[in-house]
View 1 (cartoon, rainbow over the protein chains, first blue to last red):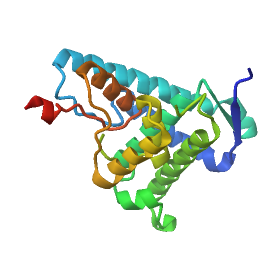
View 2: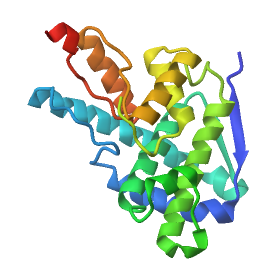
View 3: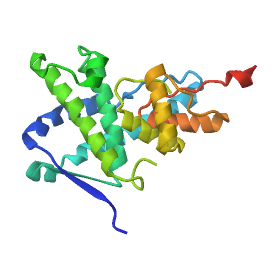
Length: 155
Length: 74
């Protein structure tokens, strides 16, 4: 049976500048969990192993996201999702979005982030770029969740 | 499960289905409970299985915590 694959053509001039933000945040997340977890109920040794494994998975996912923007993206603007990269990319998008909120979008309220009701023109250039990245990654997640069926993701 | 302002509703539903084996209706119900009340008890049972679920939810960057079952603890 042929595996399902979704190809998406992106606007190179719009998306390429956001990759710098994604790369920077991926570096920040090398040794930090995007969603710090309360693990008080675990003994110290177990907690350490637990966090190490979460971090390893997070880093693997971020590599999958960065690999999405390879040669085909820079020549054709095309990225593709399939059963091997869909889940890691969806998780990595969440990791980057959490880090964006924590480190780059503190000046915006959670309500504004959730509704997207933000005056882009009124934002500082760095915040605008971070917010565009935040929206772009949400769009990638929606695309994957909507278009890849349950045999690949979702159940 | 605790609420967070970042994750998409569709994402949370997908993770509940994938990690906890919920159907669409149950996944949406717990997602809305988290969204509106700030938390939802998504699974109860033996500790080892609970730990495995919490770990899986945390792999998806959801904020999941282990808590003793108060009814059983009495």
